[in-house]
Figure 1: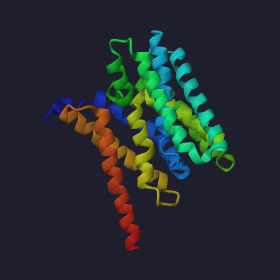
Figure 2: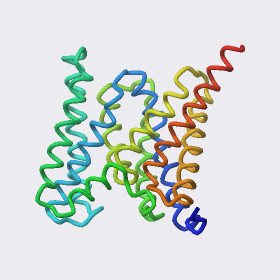
Figure 3: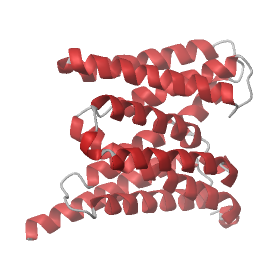
Figure 4: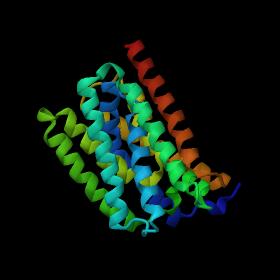
Length: 255
């Protein structure tokens, strides 16, 4: 046990990053589940990651405007194409999403092939480096997510498929740089699975609570056990979502 790892200066920004990510990913994840396009997040996140890798190959400064432009541009193009394929070939949309994920992953590996640190960089993109997040990084992401939430809930009655895809691309591009591809998927899908059968105004709050507990437990266990934080949070989120889903289902059965 490494009790010295319980450093609030490290765990505080990391936990806040989880809450910021959950703010958009819980409502967007419910919509992903409702539409039945479960692996959309992986495909778009991987495409944004491919854009980041492409920018990295030009030795641009991480977090610089060029990197952000390429990452969000790649994600927006991918989302727009998936919107078009949904209109034309809805019956094979999941297969096309999976194909995009594999293509983006393969292109990313090819771009990193000549990089001696490519394997480490690829691991960081997938698992994330949430413990390295600073409060300063969270401010622009939080403002961006606030705008996404205003548009998402403000135009709920006029939401279109294209609007969903574009907002989704922007949100995922920001979150994949904070927490990595795996945690993006877990933050979108696991809370959504737990609350899929719930209705009412408080359903999103329940999803946020599940996310908060999952992130908090994962960070604490990773710090004490000196384990990778991203992978541990994925595991704790899955466990909390499973317990929450079982509890909600039990309550419905008894009622």
